[in-house]
Length: 191
Image (cartoon, rainbow, N blue to C red; front, side, top):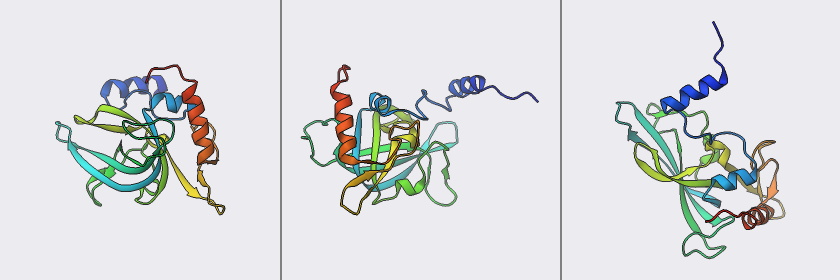
């Protein structure tokens, strides 16, 4: 049996619609900022899973996190820097109960998406997340969500996830915000 070459597999997945644009996987902080419409640092206030009719008889599942926090690098609409905002961020997969749902390997771990968890999420608006549903997609699937914790001294620390990720090692949220603003300020793309 001949092994399937990675290029061939990627082409088959792209043609079949099982994989979107090359948006899953490692990315540097500048690359993640470029691919995102915003970055929210906050707490997950709600988590819901919806079953969506794909039209072919097989249901699709979409998990949405309601995150309340502040935009890390940009301001949204009428919000002033530092104002609390709510951003709903979605990703493919999730379970309604023990028997209805769908696992997606690129989705963030369930513990990273629990209500009450402090996170940093990179997101962008998509007109068609799945089944005609529009909303904010978690950029890079699981690679666009980072957990955070409060240190003994009270600083919020964003947990890094190793080389090749937007946040490779633990960093104070304030330092991450400064770095993101610096990168955004030096970015010539229109917003």
